[in-house]
Amino acid sequence: MSNTQRLKNDFNFKKMTVPLVVMLAFLTLGFVMWRSSGAIMALFFFGYIGISVGIGLGLYAALPKKKKPLGRKLSLFLVGSFLVGFAAIYGGENMQIEGMFFGLLSGVFQAAVVHYLIAKVFGPMLFGRIWCGWACWTVMILDLLPFQRPAGRLSGRWGWFRYLHFILSLGLVAAAWYGFGFREGAMGQAALVWYIVGNLFYYLIGIALAYALKDNRAFCKYICPVTVPLKITSRFALLKIGGEAEKCNDCQACVKMCPMDIRVPEYILNNQRVLSTECSLCQTCITVCAKDALKLSFGFDLGGKDLLRERAPKLPAEAVAAD
Ligand code: SF4
Ligand code: SF4
Ligand code: SF4
Image 1 (spheres, rainbow, N blue to C red):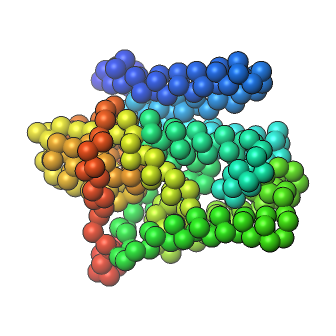
Image 2 (image 1 turned 90 degrees about the vertical axis):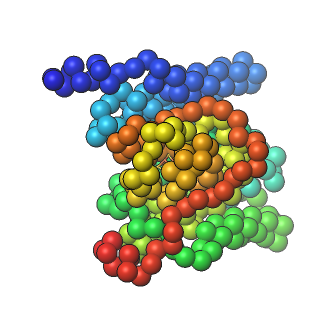
Image 3 (image 1 turned 60 degrees about the vertical axis):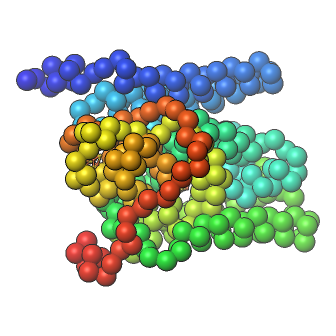
């Protein structure tokens, strides 16, 4: 069978539902914000993001299995680099979490506040942590590192460091604002420097951790403060990974490749969707499932059945084997 024929066979318009819904949601948001604020830049901004993620998701759906990750990487690059460049060149704004705190304190409804409200609060209620899989500028770089197959989670409560980081960031802003009268953390030259230095710091720690733990996503699992709002709001996400229990043979291929260590078959064999708030909707599990037991699904899961099923902690022997 030729490549073109194979591509045609793989193509299915139903698979385009999610890309189209995401694209339309962003375009609608941009349109509403343009009409209500009068700023046509809002339409350009959200339209660009929606179209970029939509193209990435669409490519992912249309390409043959081995090539699917290209769609996600393209989306990460298109959105991540745009947001970094847009904030720096157009706005001179601090898009780090501290910039958002400064924005809230100063009452400036700047890009970081809008970004957090959409990408980290309301967006995840619809599309889960799609931001983490398809748009984050930190992971845009970290996903280029060689440790695609994580070696498992550290035992212990290291994930709680993310909450501590969140509190430290908030405390730092409060101390600067109330203690030192520093008010320029949201917009302007100082804000931009904070944003650039903060991002470089994240990249540095993320790369060092990835090499130390042989895990591209170690930063997400143990350090990133943004996970705090993301985990709360994505609990109610309409879009999640679903599956068919009768097709799943519990081969564990999806668990081994899941960058967030989620024990996918435990949900699927229980006739549940993947409820873990660690899921970044990267769809790697769908790609590696030889039984085609997994797919994206829209629906409600409000029953409080949120069990965080992650891979067993990394044992010393496994760590050596993974080396
Ligand atoms: S957890 Fe943080 S660093 Fe990781 S993808 Fe999500 S927002 Fe980006
Ligand atoms: S890869 Fe597919 S068949 Fe294997 S455990 Fe995961 S969902 Fe089940
Ligand atoms: S469960 Fe699937 S979609 Fe979610 S993070 Fe793991 S591999 Fe990605």
